[in-house]
Structures are given as C-alpha cells and as structure tokens.
Length: 96
Image (cartoon, rainbow, N blue to C red; front, side, top):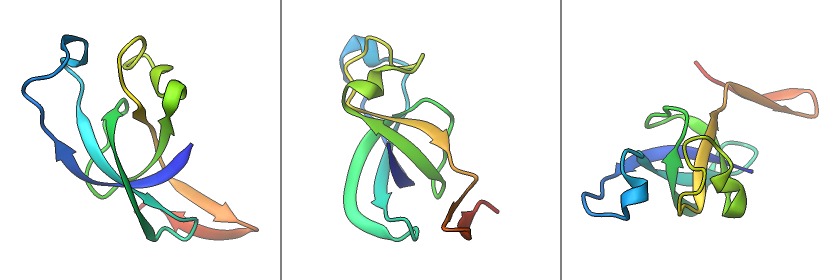
C-alpha cells in the first residue's frame, strides 16, 4: 500500500466495458511527512474519496481484491481514506 493525495478526476467516456460505472481519480504519491513525491497514478475509487483527501492505494494484483474491482482490469485502487497517521509517537497527519 502507498499513501497518496487525490488531486483530480479522470473521465473516460470510451473504455473497456467491465470498467463501466467506476470512478477514476488522479492520485499523487506522498511521503510519510505528507509531501508530494512527484509520482502519480490513476486509481479506481472504491471508497468515495474526493479531491484533497489523503488515501491508501493498493497496486498490482492487490488492486483487484476489492468488491468494486474484483475481476476488472485495473492496476491501482483507492481502498481507504486516511483519518490520521503517526510515526514514533508523533502525529504527522490528522484529517480536519
């Protein structure tokens, strides 16, 4: 799993029919301090995330393990919206 920040949406009116009904989000990877690292991915949104939210992303074969993505050709999925995280007893992020 990776941490990421939702920075936008991706719209595709023509796509593989098994992807119909899925919402695609553009997610930038973030480091443990919450800073964007430069990498990005288009991910299927399985949890209703929105722009600006910090999320957990699964990639590869793990991306096809949610109810929304089972047996669908996707390589990344937003599987959780992050409420908070801490490192070594220090809170690094808390959702407002």
